[in-house]
Image 1 (cartoon, each protein chain N blue to C red):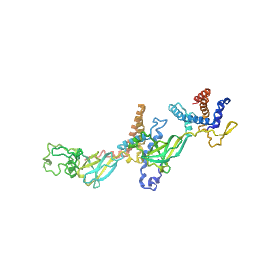
Image 2: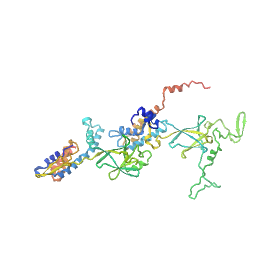
Image 3: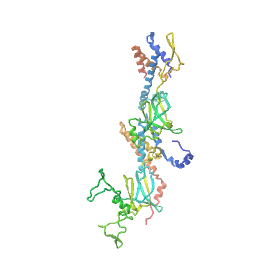
Image 4: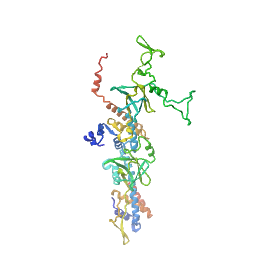
Length: 307
Length: 240
């Protein structure tokens, strides 16, 4: 890909969108990766020879996917309003979540993932608890299970210390500043820090493709931070790699091809494996942006007195 | 280029002792075509052999770069053509391949003015799996082609059609040599260099002696003259 002039970079040569090229110099395109690999790492005088372009493309994309899962640190964020069904449908390029927050009063409140399930599928049953079927032998199912319905209506209690806590609105006895409740069986010793959070909770139904929230999220703005696989919805022309990882991608393609080929000596495969691993470590360090001034900022707080 | 008249005169001088081994122009043209094709086909094997020598570090550089020499011979036959759109067939856009191709090197299409995207070669045996794979399915950024029947080239995706300016860089077969002649004069055909049918050999001049030997091999078989055949074959083998 040719270098851009200033006019092309800042104003996209007068075309829309104007910002199409902003920041593009950080990245190298998949097309360049594949083309450069074919030119430089594959040929009559190279270890890799007679390899089809689609194989290089496959391994390049796989390397980029793996990088997107963690090393790139390219976190996408999506803001959606959660309605009364307490459901946030996962975005089409979602692979894994990083953080989910409620945006309220100008402040982000990070939510905790509920350690208990908050939804379930249900089957219809008769009075003898026998499962009901339709004429075709398929199991009959209700629209919502009891646990789902109660979560949506706000009737479901929570082990978290939020508005649905089992202690909220319950009658108890205050003895010497400590609350005691009738329904608690057994003694409680201290606080369960895992569930000591006043914010609503969520749980991700991966197969269902939704995030189910507890009832406190209804009507709130939720921001999902997540990672994708960098495949840009199948548009190969948009797939890019940060230049800090360019050499790693070449090494990864070379290793993956050699590793799956018949007759390649083990020492060659190992050499490429080590090269790939070393380049990944280098790139991760580089992209972490660890620099002295930032460390200094952190270390300035080390002697601060905690009152 | 090797002059076809020089080769014919040499062949006749060796073969036509006492008017015993005369070769008619038509026979000569047949042998000449086959001899040129034999040498042309050997180029690829030679190139492969020399590349292997280079990879074993038993071949030199500059004047000793044997592979480069053969590559130059081969590159004389590299040609280019714009492919003609033929039809739409399912997921394929079908184009007509050049009639004289020996090996398709590169196919490209113009994605925007002066920007070309390479269309990679695929196998008809694999194309269904490739199309069904998320990561390898041919796209306008990474299109593929397969060779079809009846000299056709089928490109996936089919959005690359007649408007796409599809071009092909390919290695062609050499043009058939032809010793054009005028009507017999005193029993001898006379070479006619101005005849539109006259065509010299396209392979390089350093191959002239091998051309002569190969034609003599075939002529020796034709006139049932084992000495001519054996001598020519021995010379040919020594030169390889």
